[in-house]
Image (tube, rainbow, N blue to C red; front, side, top):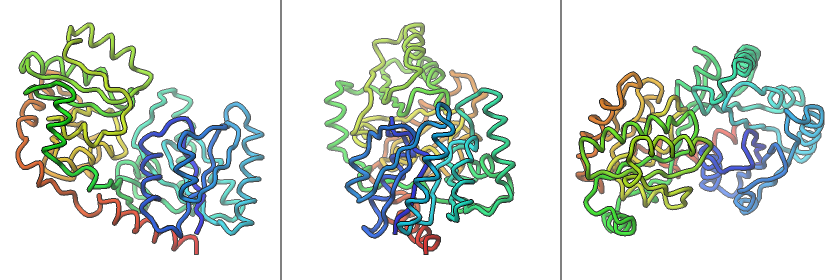
Length: 364
């Protein structure tokens, strides 16, 4: 069974790219994902090839719209001739519905998977195009997946039926170990400090400048605190300026992109993620898998992100000082982290098999 996947960036290995790759790697060898990617590079091509998948590049739709359409049609026809009949589209917005419409026209079964409940691009024209795509496809016969009810409502409209696919993780990888915690904290030289962590791309959605303001208030109340920032992104300069403005440079560690997030989380005492919107927030699930307390945004982060009692939803209308008070209270609860256990639907070995069965039912 070959499933054709579209909607990834080939330039970065982001959260959705990681999630889909991980899910496929926990499926049987009979389920192979092939990919259509805009541009001419794919930084995770080796992982795709190790699973037996292929990569098909198309020109960027903005720079070469005609070339994009022609190459997309050519690729779809070639894959259909080989027996592939499902196009599985990962959605961050409804702004580009061309792939879905072209695939439908060529006789593919089209799956739209909603991954977000807000727009990173705040341009008014972009929002209008998103709204048009949403209205255009609202009553079309597409198969719809989502990672939360908020994402489904945002992408497809309220009342539109969609299948909930949980953003599952490898829970064994994230299980808490005191030995790992001690090792990480020794390496980082944090002593008995309270460690606040932030994990994600430095972008508007993640609200990183506000996160720094919250930590600065927390530091006033609890001076033996430090902040570990994991990730990179376009807002780094703004974040650096805020750290300097707050006078907290010596209490902030910039850890960059890391391949050992599951270990770093075990060394932390709190995950602080004041996102402006989230489809689900897979990092929130990972943190709860390690028993790490979490403070994140109320209403804009879906209730499905609550995988344990170690998560607190704080209003974005609250002041940084109020957020800081909530953080201190949550960070104080480090008991029984080794007993943390996620619900089965957040365990990737189970959810990946369920997704494979669903895909198989549509590709038959």
